[in-house]
Image 1 (cartoon, rainbow, N blue to C red):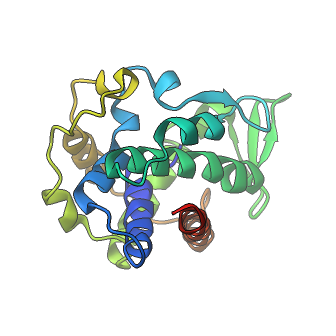
Image 2: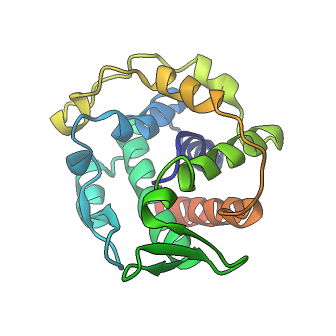
Length: 215
């Protein structure tokens, strides 16, 4: 459930650390990180199962690993990387960060006691708008370099797996440009910038450590 920019930040951070001990093609790896969100069937491409609380879904990481963990295929490893972030971002950051009052259909931020209806929270008025606040801070502070995106083909390579290769018509570049066109001043009402960045870095370190052990 992280946005495009958060996935690209994660992918670049992971790649930088992985490249210290393994030879991996950067373009294919970053491309793989973009592919799951382009699938026409996101339920399948994200291997969805129920998360630790009602209303959320996370990837079935055991199945993801079985299908996609392949150090000889940076494209598949990139897809695995995307789904790995989805799982741990939801379970280790998004769920613990808020109070989920499903009985009253409200979401409460315990840091500031602000609250939203569930409908508003999962919209551009809430979480998705908060990503727009964070995106430009990540770019401003040098957490990711978007110049690499000029090297990524607009039509991403096929994986040989239909769940990833049957894609929406909009390309990742069109989607990313629309995403970046939304500029919102940072308020921190929903996401604390530093907490979110630290969480992504911790998940990145964990991912690289697991790859190092298995490689």
